[in-house]
Length: 358
Length: 256
Image (cartoon, rainbow over all chains, first blue to last red; front, side, top):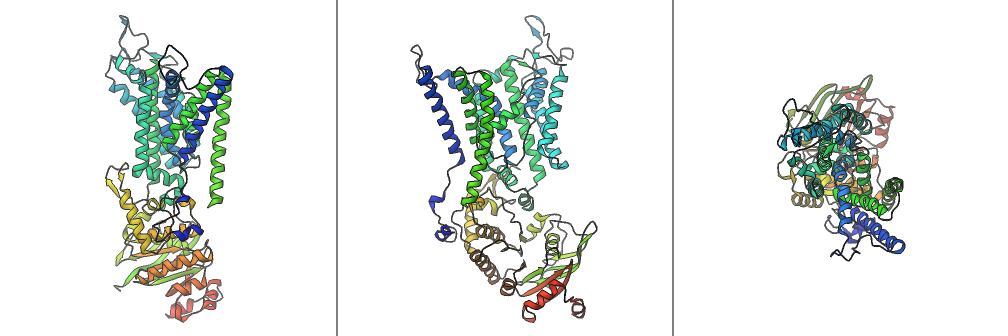
């Protein structure tokens, strides 16, 4: 209570009370992690993790590795942007990986070419209907439509039947995966048009990821929608009593998460030039992990897109760091699990410490 | 009749077979501070929830500000000018003070539906003005509510009611969880409201506070209003006997 005496009519305050933004801690963790890999690399392998050590390349950093790190995480990162918003409102979305699978299959069917090397496309889904060589807008709209539909179903189930988000999105996870397999009876769908293939070419996934991250960070910070996300995750009853339409808001949040998952699907199958029913398996958990590592609280109300982006980089650094140290991929998964649990434990601990401090 | 801010007639609420509120007749005049007392489960909070539109009444009529009203939800009641400080503090812990004050009625720069851009500068200024008006002291407006003491939180909740031109303020046990000093701070705010001529309904268990701050005391028991007494016509023992039911008051109400 001592600090209150500094306040006169709420106009002055003790500046020492200002807390670090949580994103700063996450960023610090990223730097420590990179430093650790750098150190281990120098000591045990005689190679640098971050910097260029080859004479034939003129660069300060090992650009190839940096590109791989960010390219690796950008597709799941797009999903994580949506998942972050869902978690901030106090929900969870387990369906995003399966939405990626289903959307990739369906959207790719509308992005195929008619002929391959002069022969009719053997993988074309709609050759008989003549739905080939369509403008790129068609598969895009189809994809967004799929994501929107899945998100609306998720959101409506959660808002109106009041079943827990975990169950609703688990159902969607299984159903959407079923749709992905049923769509082409398990066959992969390939040979996209050039314009569709351009979406995921080169560093395009990174550009799309960063643009969407900036867009949604601005939306969360500066719009009513963002404010209400935090309000609902923080105290749903208070939000309802304050007149926020909590049901509609939840539907909107899950719809946005669905659309972002479908955009990730477009980028993914465009990059791989093929769509398969198994695409996006476990992406939902990776996305949740990125958000949690990035400081998004699973109990809702706290977190940011910036945090999630840094969380996704930590994710990328771990994966590529393990490759750099020539460790088996099995270790990656084990450590990933430990880090996810560690991040949640850290979050809980920080919350408790704050509660005592106040 | 014109100076009556709020009037209820035969206000009734049943939760299934539970008769939480039965035929409540209530009046509140301009500038008047009325206390509602009663045991737990006596119907005080239920009464407030019907007036504020949080729940829909089973039967009865409500007049507010000269008109008969049927609020579909709390936002309508609030738009009509009824501000409520809820028992469980309807604040979002992870938001700062201005965001909480304007929760659900944010001031926007451009209207883009849910993606409307917030006017943060305006909301911050209005928040400062409201805190000054109610003499609330908050060290840092940018701090989230989570970092504040119970008293500061309660002050924010009360300042919220003063931010908007309200015609009636309802407080549901505003000092129940507060320490001595914090309670004094909240009571000072209530006195400020009295001096400004703002009508208030105060639900409280604190006898001293009620006699200190209010003009009239209404006692609920088992869903019914059993007493409606001016402060100078009664005392603590009298009120307690109404609350516990050793005095029924039905005869008096009938006579009055």
